[in-house]
Length: 58
Image: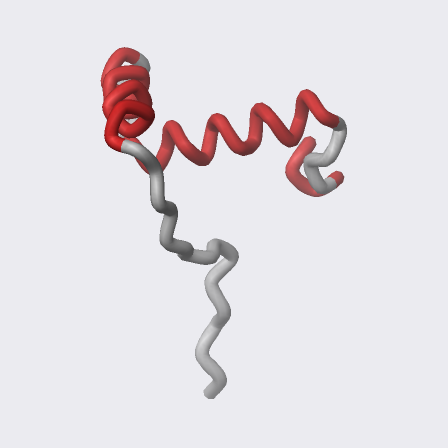
């Protein structure tokens, strides 16, 4: 039986300490994990630019 592929992908992100601290604080303020905050930021930027894949608009 073939293993089901994940719908998410992982990657390494290098970010300066000051920016990371700002993201950590923002995430805590909104009760999100850092990963959740980064996903929200990326989705928001994609949506605002009109580049979010159609299936993500649902």
